[in-house]
Length: 460
Image (cartoon, rainbow, N blue to C red; front, top):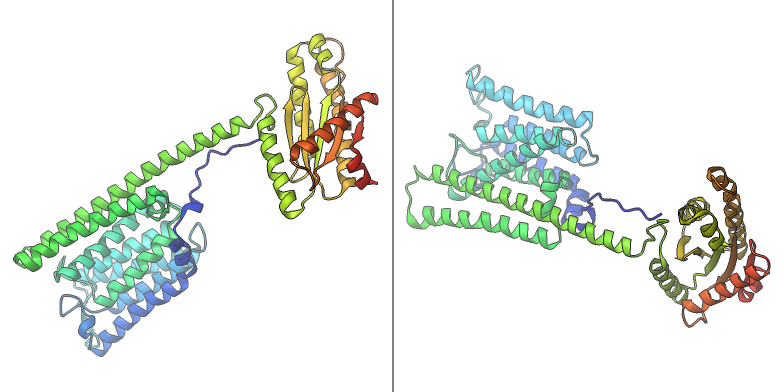
């Protein structure tokens, strides 16, 4: 029977960059670690130079570098499965716990923000929140999807806010991120997006369809326009620097809100588009499906015949055609009623389908006449299959007879077997040979198999 699955599948509508990110997750993890460790090395050497952020005190703190390296390994390992493993959760918990403990102890003044003269700088609030949200996003993926995506969005907004701050030369919450720390988090953002590409709200930005393009354009415009406006206010208009952190934060909020709206709008459009495509597929399936038996109808069988004839012309793949007709079916309808006749047709379809091989297609040609399009691997295999089908239909009499309240129902079928020839003008030539063989089987007494002469020579 023809089955239709309602499940929406977007996996074949991704941009190639998603596959590339997944394949190169190890390289991205290495870059993420390298940025953090190089930033730490510059910090320890006391020569951050141009790698600092907008503030001269910005540097990669050892705690930040350790947590980012742990998360780089967790992101790489976490991309291999639908759910994070125990080692991934441990690394995420370690990174989250370490940065929170350090920030808490610093806030409580248990030890100074810079306890050693070997390095300078501190773990900013932005770095702490980014590491916490990235840890939660990676550790919760597959288990608490909604919470994981919320944490991913929060992490991306923090990174975006820090990029805007670095672009405008301002700081937030009393601190900022060093350039290499920010670069490490940008690589982390790519890894996190790649690992969560199966989530509908992330996936909508990665679709190659018109919906995906529209969502990306909306997100891009919603990012560039506020950003350019901020640059105009700060660089050209001359807004006071003390007031600009608030403006920059508002720009981040506007960008984040616009991106979220673009994603949600794209998701709604994608769902509607998938439902429309599903309805169209159902209509197509209904057009080629027999409503009573669930087999292909004549139109559906004709489609298969055309394809198989084309395959035969191109690749020489042999095709067998079997036409069979239920014997004295009109007598069944007249004696037992049309409901019983319909029950016989459904019973025939159900009892034959388990006997078919892979590649065989069974359909209802019309009325009580059926057609089987079979892969002709070996001619002997097809003749043996047809004999099994004949026996199965004959044995159906006992099953239907036990349920009949009147006289027993006698069911049998006559079979005509032929094959497509490369010299045939169309599939109709093979159908005619199978039909002529079917009439020979009926003339021979019914409930038997007749083979067309051209096919009989191959069997012999």
